Length: 115
Image (cartoon, rainbow, N blue to C red; front, top):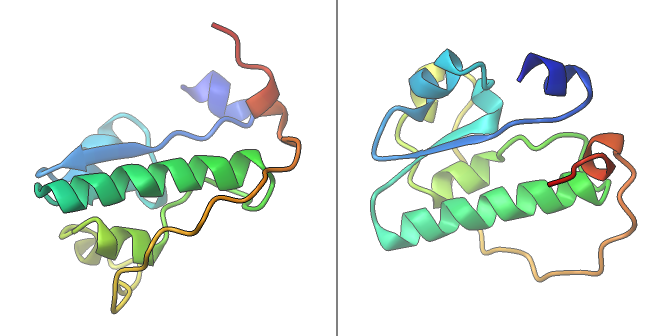
């Protein structure tokens, strides 16, 4: 993970019904790239929408990182974020944005992935 991070890759960690921040930290994932979701179908769906939007925004160059927003954390039922002292949750969940055409990726880390 250190080698890929040095090459510009960013890693996110989602955990459902657990303190994902503790688990993610043990794997080297930063708190701003971690989200602990509630167990309801609504919360799990919102967390995957947030992960997809985060990746899309980073890959398209609209965002400089894959960090999860406070609104995404609130929508996903994240109950552990407040305990980190990193900020306050958003007051109300937000609806996912409508998809828009993505420009060509500008991040080398996105372009060098092969299976």
